[in-house]
Length: 218
Image 1 (spheres, rainbow, N blue to C red):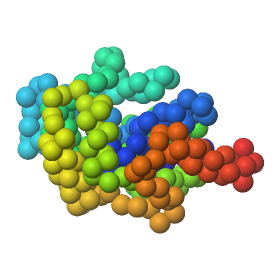
Image 2: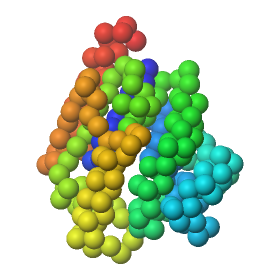
Image 3: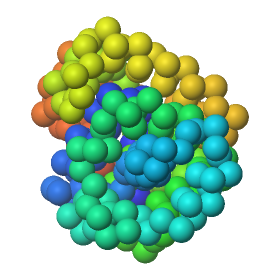
């Protein structure tokens, strides 16, 4: 069974997906973290998003793998907070808009989830990557709510206004991408998480998954 979770930055996708994978025993796959890993590599090597050919060439060589505990490794290096740095935030939307990079990431996601129960989350996971997932969710929240969450978790010294501007910029880029644009799938369950606790969001999502599994006799 594939559970696909879509939505903009800061809507709670990652937190909910991790909770589901742990409680259901499903593999956790986050396409956004793969884009961030490639972006991190570019930042660390001084490669700008405009140097797309170089990024594509090197991305094909990177060994990016999801581990059983839900962590992502790049060439054997376990990645964590560095994926959420302000430097990565500043370039990830541009790099993820490169069609060839999207093909590379989608291949990694599909290979990771092949033949397994998985919770997959990302910006176009319900529309492009797993259009036939058994259950789909589109999580959303206001820009202000998403900025507040980012401020609470951020590893940089950005203030609230800077985070709001960054989120607005990323939303604009994500919604206007020629490939893999942020959209709400027609058969996705839409849930605005503004004002809801993580526990409340989880309860809504979890109950729908249980219902779907019962329908499929799982």
